[in-house]
Image 1 (tube, rainbow, N blue to C red):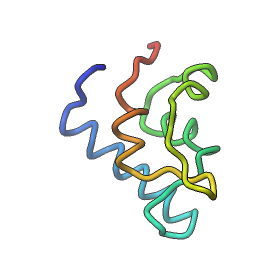
Image 2 (cartoon, helix red, strand yellow; image 1 turned 180 degrees about the vertical axis):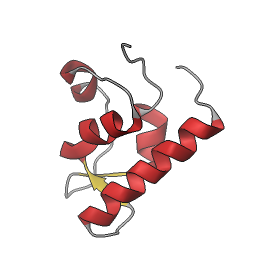
Image 3 (cartoon, rainbow, N blue to C red; image 1 turned 135 degrees about the horizontal axis):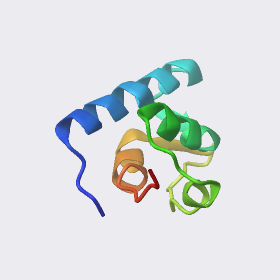
Image 4 (cartoon, rainbow, N blue to C red; image 1 turned 60 degrees about the vertical axis):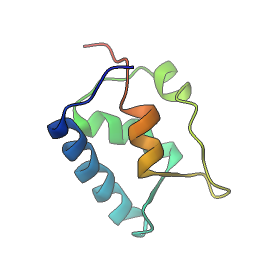
Length: 79
């Protein structure tokens, strides 16, 4: 697992919060949009990477920010 810089974490949080705003401001993002969130942060995940993130979704299929940072933003991602 690669370590994220403070700037990368802050940028990821801003993007996550923007998607959360569109999803209803419940501090969660729909799991089906995680690939879009990752791309907006500037990473280029393959579909396989997005599908294999092993996210803990709630009963409504949403992902919390902490889960996103811990499992999704750690990578690895192709350039």
